[in-house]
Image 1 (cartoon, each protein chain N blue to C red):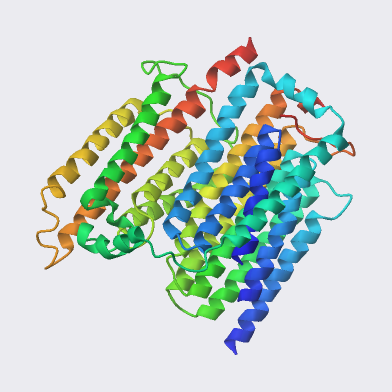
Image 2: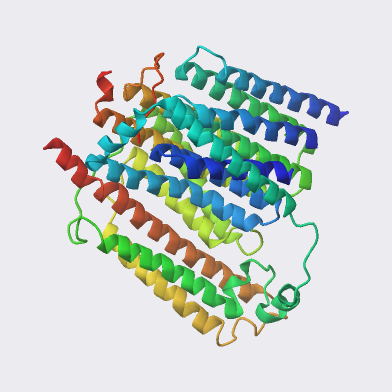
Length: 104
Length: 323
Length: 89
């Protein structure tokens, strides 16, 4: 029974990640839209997947280590997204219709 | 499943080879080393995968610093001419050979995945004799025991040579150490708040890797990398210019001498094996001591490399820019 | 469990495509960051299938040291674009 619940929760996490893929491939959107959708959905998907796996393994050493990983990812993933977006904005990157690619 | 991973692996390697722009190559290299680590894990080599995980982050940093040095001195103009050529032809010329190359290598890899074990004499001897030769609990951490100590010694010597080379082939002599450039996000409150939580976790995890190294994968090298990444996090929020770089360089030499001396007194005289039948306590103490020494060595070495590259090597280009 | 592992392995394909065709270098960096988190998930699924806990150390060291490379790439790229005069565009 607990296995079925854990599979359902993990499937929910996979569905969140699928939405992230849809977000980064939506046509007509720029980099800031992509980073907003992808990183937010990805963090939520990771959390949901980890909750499903913790339900599967019960109260054990595995779940403790998994909890530590979840804490680290929940802290660091938004930080990395924030720094990427702010540095892109600071460097004057304006997503335009012309195919702008960095030389070198 | 291994075949799928091998396909990604070969594809990212082909991207590295056929790309012509430096920053793309670094990003492809990041993808390549991530997939490499998972491939090692799937093929059953956990400790090598762990080393790859630690190395990939540092290799990225050093590559990007070196490339920024190169393009910062007036070489960036040449690459803009390349970018302004006809786009479609370049894309076509780039992706068709990449695809052919990838397909050929993929066929080779699929056919060469090992299905059984080759019973050669050397493999047989290694599996049979490692317990008698070195007498460790774990075949991986046995590199600190027996004749395998030479392996560790020469690896440490290699890192010493790298640090000495970087220190002496540098823009500044080691006598004058200026106050270098600070990071751009030093005043970010979000970064400060995050690093206040993350830095204790990094230190605790490095200590855990060193203390637990003789039971599981990991050990001294990974613990040293964790401590070195603590210094990098400190650079992001506080700056590392108040740390005594000369004392760290002295300490690195002292630690290397200790790495050389400890096996001479412990292994080559046979002290480790005296009471190994009764209790493995002394052997464990020796292993943890060697792990801690190697960890200190790696942390000091990477800290010196990072300091010279980030803080000192970046100065002349910026001074030229301002003038 | 194997099905979920296969689906996440299949998810590597769109991110690789985004890394390869991304119109700017920031899109490639975004793809690299997403591939990093997918790698951590794959390692956790490995550990769950094999039933061992020492494999989770990999995931911890990836999460702790993988972000450093991305942050440094973002910092250096932005500084380089400012120096080249693209900030006025």
